[in-house]
Amino acid sequence: MTRPRVRLDLPRAPRRSLLPEYDPEAFGRLSERVARFLGTGRFIVWMTLVIILWVLWNVFAPDDLRFDKYPFIFLTLMLSLQASYAAPLILLAQNRQDDRDRVTHEQDRKQNERSIADTEYLTREIAALRMGLGEVATRDWIRSEFQDLIKEMDERRLFPPERDEGDR
Image (cartoon, rainbow, N blue to C red):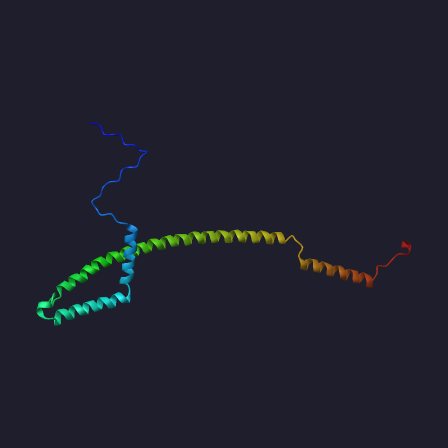
């Protein structure tokens, strides 16, 4: 029995998975919200209140209503469970933040490269303009030339050149 030839121009049919499907982006956003909440003073206050109420109830309540006797093993279990879920969620949120920071850093680096290239281009253009202006008569130079000409004309008026009698 021969296997049917696999066509390379068609996508494969999706495989069935026994694992549940989830949206990684939605899960990541949820983990960031949880990590953001776990890092607040509000969480610490609520957690402290719950633990105080838990301990007070299990110490002072009637014996038949206590659900966690003195060594508070169930409380320890609940805190361990909360910590075992909180730690990976916080790490996932940190990884997502690192990815965002990496993208932002890369964009900043590219922007800096463009800014440096623009600055170097403008520097070359200014240098070229300065070199070109070195050959152009400036207002101060023209003014000094006019002043020299005026002095020379004034000197000629005061001291006219001597004429020979044969020039008349």
